[in-house]
Image 1 (tube, rainbow, N blue to C red):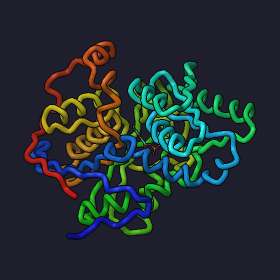
Image 2: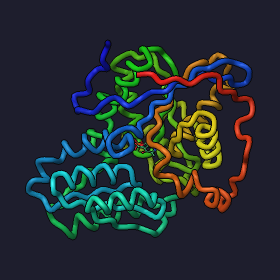
Image 3: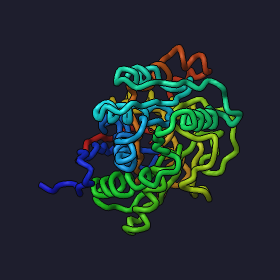
Image 4: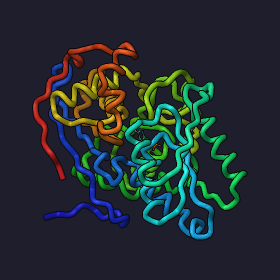
Length: 331
Ligand SMILES: Cc1ncc(COP(=O)(O)O)c(C=O)c1O
């Protein structure tokens, strides 16, 4: 038995599923790393642990913790805060999943919802303004600042990325990473540069997101994209693929129906981007998608027929030219 390289953070490796697909007549391999299997249901379980450790000594004397979050990081921090009896405030917006809000509150955290749009396609800029106001009002309040804290990319450079490299037998391939703060992608870039992994790293962003230098516009889905540039990737990233909500949703439903794997909206965007790359280049035969979370937090959006109808998404046979050949788990 060979064991995965230890990340030193005590987390078990998340599972990887390998799909055999035929896309535009050519066989391809698509590896899905299912980060929803992390503690607290998302890749942000890893980020939260790293951020927590970074501020832990300040928390002992402080007045509690605050963070701006679209939901996943908020849940993970709420759990850590509850375990250490530290008061935690999650600053969220109206797109945060109801399931996540329920769990964050159940862990005893305070939820502050900012419902004024920021004029840049989302709520982030106003969420951050609220965090700054809270820091002014409550001396000693600690902000993990997932947007600038180097512990965010470091969690992925030392944990997520080497784990995926090992699980995919160190093969060179395209690796697709969803972008919001840019922390995950920056960590993968660092690992790839230091290890010589031979990866083509593809940033996947929401249409209307400024995270990697795009023009801002209305965005519908929670978790993917940003109202401003990533501080971890100030010069952007190439290649980057922009995905619409309808494309992401179509893929989520296709994956659930054909493979039984139910992932979140950002993962749907990643697989949509991978299929686009496969279609445009027959020589591209392998790709891995780092799927940030699972379907449990999208039951009232992506997986709700009423929500889809309200947003004009009604398609049924979704992915022309794509055939599922095989699916197997990898450890
Ligand atoms: C749903 C979702 N989408 C995208 C991302 C990418 O986020 P970031 O760029 O902040 O690492 C994450 C987080 O890790 C996420 O949870």
